[in-house]
Amino acid sequence: FNIDGILAVGPRGAPKTATTAEIHKALVDIYCGHVAFEFEHIPDSAERKWFADYVESTSKDSALSSSKKRRFLELLVKSETFDNFMQKKFGQVKRYGLEGAESAIVALDELFSLCSHSGITEAVLGMPHRGRLNILVDLLKYPPRALFHKLRGNAEFPDNLPASGDVISHISSSPSLDYGCQEELNVTMLHNPSHLEAVNPVVSGYARAKQMYLYDKNTDPGCALGDRLIGIQIHGDAAFTGQGVIMETLGLSNLPHFSLGGTVHIIINNQIGYTTPATNARSTLYTSDVGKLVNAPVIHVNGDYPEEVARAMRIAFEYRNLFRKDVIIDLITFRRWGHNELDEPSFTQPQMYNIIRARESVPRVYERKMM
Image 1 (tube, rainbow, N blue to C red):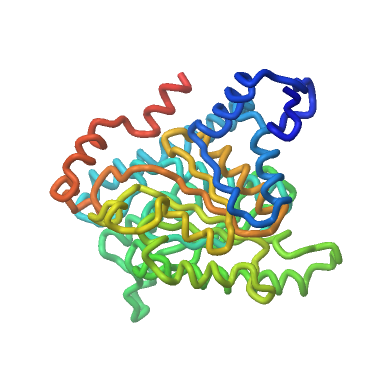
Image 2 (cartoon, rainbow, N blue to C red; image 1 turned 45 degrees about the vertical axis):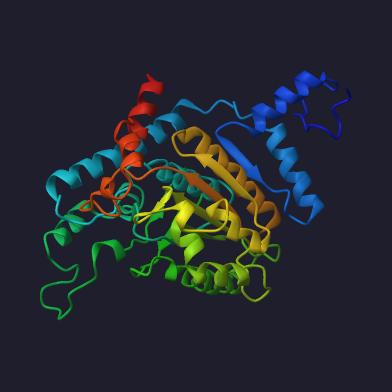
């Protein structure tokens, strides 16, 4: 068969014809692996065609550099080491660790790198408490000494100020990250209350205001919305379908006076909300289905495979950059402990946690693959 119209292929050295079996195998390899895609619901045929062509013509086996793989391993090991240290030294603290979802830090680092190499200089990040301390310390340069000082019951303010500070799951950081580009990437992580997703419209408003400031200050007449700044929102799987603020913020995302030029959403999907499994928590098949409210494409990726997570992020970023619309990554992971480290999850989910406790950690599996 002539594969034109059936399967998109790379421009160099790709066959123009294939048997039915070869076409079937190619499609299975692309769409039935550790990454899956939802884009057929998008009403714009140009977007659907671009998505299919990009996914099918970009080899998932594209070799990563050894330095990139070392970077992934470094981040994974740092995250696991941080959680292990916290469990031993501050075992009585609710830290909401990233154990089981360590690949989220790989996703975020890859996104930051892509932003920096694309000329974006500002990133506004909002996220709930899950993995917040890992990302702050391991990626956003939050001083460990300052965190441990606060964990011992001290405030982040000088003693002579009449202020008590905030809980550790609300703190933030605003570093400049160097990815070897001409300009550093300035990341602003916003403070977040315990109401999980309440930070989302704040991210949108803060980023929009900053976009307008960049418009005013930028002397390049070709600068468009989203060229220099990106909004990033990290969500929990239960909260993404359970809190109305998600739908309200998504509903504003394509309006001319509210758009950011595309927000990247990362759902850390540990398949349980507190003690409630997905079957009792939502009516949709996937937690990301509410994103179809604005026809956002969804990339589902298995968090056990950090390199596939990075690949999913590259595809999401390319879509966002080209169409300037929201895109969702459904990062499917697990939660090593309970809702926090003081909970015993096997009381309510004994079968799930029998499986989880028999699993090796994501960093250990990736380390063995690298050896």
